Image (cartoon, rainbow, N blue to C red):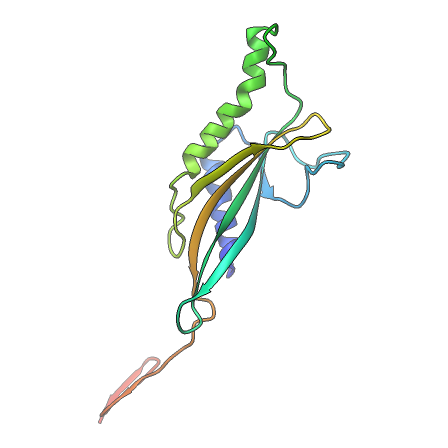
Length: 171
C-alpha cells in the first residue's frame, strides 16, 4: 500500500484485532450501520473506521504535514435494560459496551503507529441517537503524520564532485 490512509487503516485494524478480541468485525465505515439500513452486513460488536477533517500544511519540497481525526464507530446490537428495576445480570449485559469501549481506548490512546505517524489522542466520545435498537458510540482520536509521497527529488553538484543517484565521481 502506498497511501498513508490505507496503511494507517491496516495498522489500526491489526492493533484492535490483536488487543480487543471482543470486537468481532473491523472494517472501513461505508455506511454499514447507518440509520435506515434494514439488514446490517456486520457482526456485533463491530468497529468501523473512517478518516475525517484532515488538514494539510506544506513544509518544503512538496512535503506536507497532515492532522485530522480518526473516527471509530463502535456498534452493538440490541442491548439489555439498565433501569433501576432490572436484574444485576441485565444491567451488566446492558453496560458491557462501556467495558469494550474502555478496552479499545486503552489500546488506542497514545499509541504510536510508527514511521511517519504521530500518536493517537482521544478528543471526543458520543452516543448516536438512533431510531433502531443499535447502540453506536462514536470515538474520535486526533493524529498527525508527514506525507513524503510528492517530495521533490533534488540533486546537488559540488565543486569538483558530481553527486547523482548511486554514482559519485571526483574531479
